[in-house]
Image (tube, rainbow, N blue to C red; front, side, top):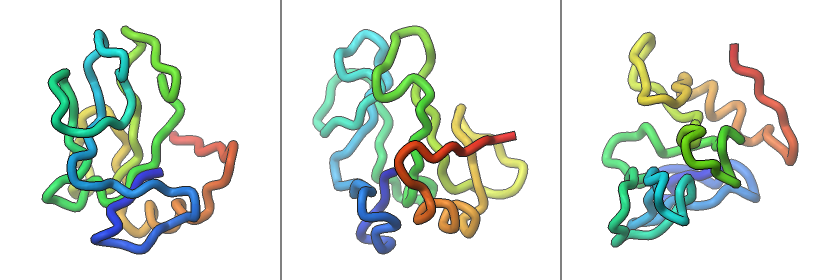
Length: 115
């Protein structure tokens, strides 16, 4: 789980802060594919520290992570939605209050089933 410490309290004692310069590698040819890395970072990546609140709290699913297999698809995040019915770019968007309710309840080997 990742969170913005400048915008919220730590949701769990094992959650990792999203710091300035944290990015997520989405380059299948890079050795750090599907991992959080630091900018500057030349391969293709996604900024984790966004101006909007979408990534203030991110729950990482185990889809092709932490041991990524190239060609199997990028990691799937659970994060705040923009609004009801608005699509994500391959992630799972949740109501902010639902995401905040789930986050502190997650433990090692918790299974979240998305239907």
